[in-house]
Length: 193
Image (cartoon, rainbow, N blue to C red; front, side, top):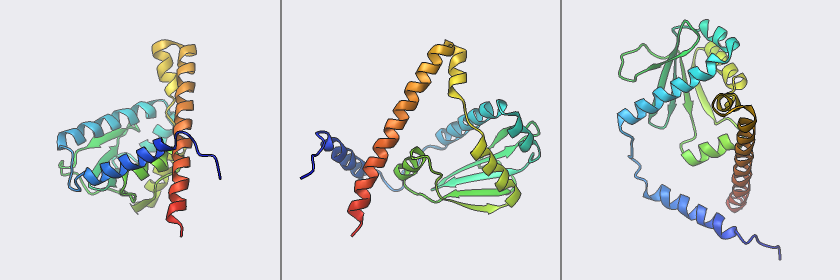
């Protein structure tokens, strides 16, 4: 008989809690429109912050100025346009803007599975509709542009403390990723006949 972890009850409790949350969450639950708009505007601010540190990315996006991209997940829609400065501009859903040049539809309906996929370092399955060249540019951005949190934190607290803080956070994310992968294995084994 294999030795069982003394903390296996924690994994079982997490599975039970997740199942209960999914069962208790109404299928028609939607966020207020103002909350969605605020979150989307914050996403645009963050994307522009990252793009400001990447001249090559801004150069590529300048060539795509005026083009619209729409990202859809479940009933959520995020639409933005590329500016002449090579940045991202938020486009409100009810603004009467032209049809998107590129539509990216995230296929995974479960938020838990979506987070798991991202934590494992994978890209979620996406259906792409629209301009192929614009899709290639967006894919290049996803593959090559990275936020450097250490640089931002260093501006606030200095280089050495920022390095220590970011390395600790990376270890925590790695531990979380490992935990998710370990939990996914027993789930896959239960599903297999």
